[in-house]
Length: 132
Image (cartoon, rainbow, N blue to C red; front, side, top):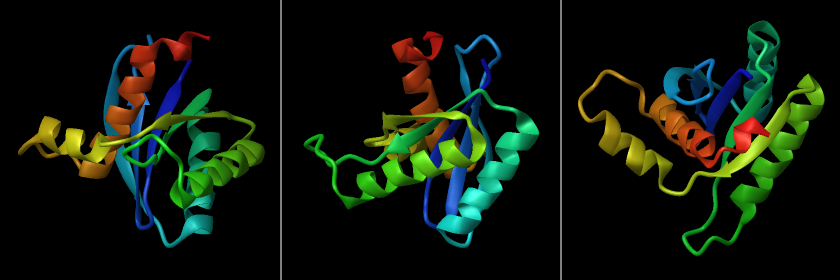
């Protein structure tokens, strides 16, 4: 199964890819976007071109685990992306992924947005849910 990780932002969308065996997430690239529709168009094009089987998107929850308006927006975005591509989109808690990504990459030449996507994807892969 080929899995794409996404850390969705208003101006940048971080992407990560899982290894073919589904064990390791690697930062891949960053899409520079001009709003939601531009982001969706770029993601749809990428998903069709690269033929991913599954997408894991970060779900922004509050520190107490509750979901606010950003989480609701991400749920809607995930539904639209799945409908437009036919690819399964899974939401995974992204709490503190950017902080963890910054700590992991340190001074390496890896875009923070892509590293955050890799953190989200790696946490998902570690749950074993990708085997289902």
